[in-house]
Image (cartoon, rainbow, N blue to C red; front, side, top):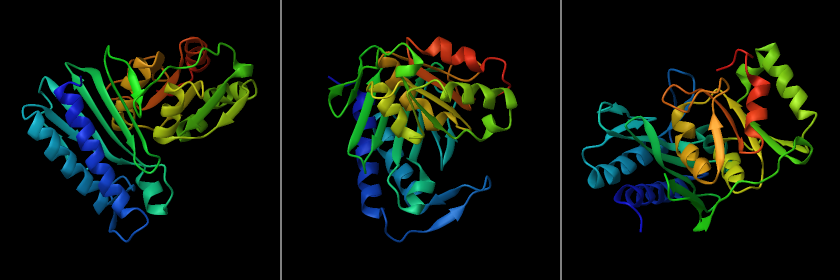
Length: 259
């Protein structure tokens, strides 16, 4: 039986998914934010609907939304929301789009929902209760060597600016079985399901990765930033893998100057 928080998060993700499906490849308003990233009326509509559902179920919880900002951040429990992760994809009309909903309690990520409505994928997890994708239990792979492993990368601009980090990534690419750049929600779903084995990513924020952090850990994976620090509100990079590969993967980037 789901907790009230997970029930609310799943309801909110499904409601946002309906909005996204209805607007995909249609006409909608696009504006540019101060950081030069796009935001659409669909992003905002999804976030308002998500917050309405979550506030009704958990009225005392804080809220940190990509579009509407932070509220009650000193609350014991805080929702972390990216209503439409992949806005650039949405604007360009390709389907790597998701809704990310996570719950942080006393500074710890304890619940995650990652909904990809255009892929018909809905993943979720609560700490200590396992991870699931469309009702099927998730488990990372057991591959323990790079010649058999598949690596996915995403948002690696800051890696290219640090020669040591770029060199480390290049050396790894030469050793793995396959290199892909699935990006966004998708490589975390694949990693949690055991279909790929490692992810390296920079230039992210906590709202991009919070939900999938919980899902991946409950599937048996390991995730931290490129400095080996735990995922938190200030995280901007990711080293994620199954338990057999993670320590070696992280070691390759230690001291490379990317955090």
